[in-house]
Length: 193
Image 1 (cartoon, rainbow, N blue to C red):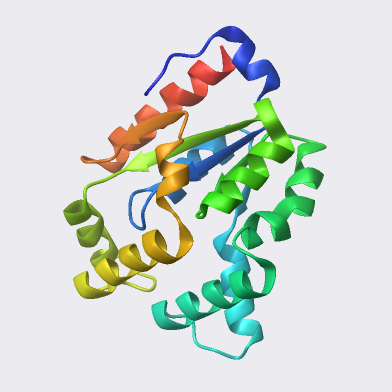
Image 2 (cartoon, rainbow, N blue to C red; image 1 turned 180 degrees about the horizontal axis):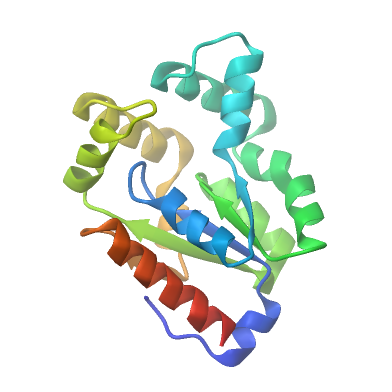
C-alpha cells in the first residue's frame, strides 16, 4: 500500500475507483471490495451494453470503437457522467467501488463530485505480465499486438495515465492472484480501521 491511512479517512470515504492498465488485475481488486460489502459499478458494462445495442460482436475492435464514440458523444468524462446516477443511487445503501475508471476527465469529474469521499487505487503490473494474462483470459483474449495497441490507445486517446498517476494507493500485481487478494484485503482492512 502506498500510504498509511488515519482513522478519519474511512469516515469520509464513499467511492473507491480502481484504475490500471488492461490486464493489471483491476476487476479482481474490485471483486474483493465487493465481497467486503461495496457496491461494484463496472464502467466497462456500459461499453458492453452499447456494443450489443449497436448489433456488434463483443471484441476488442468493436469495444474500442464504442468507447471512442461514447466519448465523442458525451465528452471525455462520458463513463463517469453516464454512471453518476448509478453511483449516487448505490451510495444510498453502501460504499461504492468503481471498476475501470479510465480518463483524466472522469477522474476530475468524480473528484469534484465526491471530494474527500473519493479515493483511487491503482493496480500495477508490468506490460509483460499483463500481456501474458490477457492472452490467457477465457473471454476476449488479446494477442500481444492487440494488448500493446490497446495500451497505446488508452494512454494517447483517453488520458488513462492521469488517474493512475493520481492514485491514493498502489497495489503491485506481479505474482499470484492469491497475493493480490491478500494485499487488497489488507488495504480494505486499513481503510476500515
